[in-house]
Image (cartoon, rainbow, N blue to C red):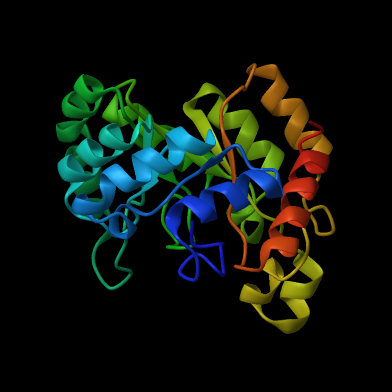
Length: 244
């Protein structure tokens, strides 16, 4: 949802219609972007346009039970979360905290039919596919899995290797590009400033690994915000890198 530069300039229903015209099949809003009193408006816009609210993003959101309930109400089947990390604090207690927190909320997620999907981010925590796999396995609940961001780990690793190790733990994808040469020359954050399909990611290799697990889940574009022409281009580029 945050990719839509003009999202606040049109009625919600019109934004949903425009997204369909741009080539999108679904949308993922942040939990904080859907006020409870506005939920019915979102539900109606989805129903009237066919643009599915497949899940929500709860990065930085502490009320996981409330987020799960809102996601269920909107018709979504997943909620993206981030295991936050303070580099100034000891790492093991933070690992234990997030493992136990997500394990505790997992039964409610299962009851509501909403999977909790942990995303790999730039927190310098869970920066290896083996770390992420171990973290998920220690939680040990089928409703806590991975929202695999294909671009985020290129700073530290290789996208297709993450896909290989995570295997069926990867339930949904975030799609973005990253260019190592640009990052080396201009700064790490600048690595994202490249169009999909024109960076360092070997998309064919990523597709090969996803095919091995029979991946059929949602893939969400997560790139810089832009206008409708830009969003249409992003949708077309997603089709190309995913070979749809």
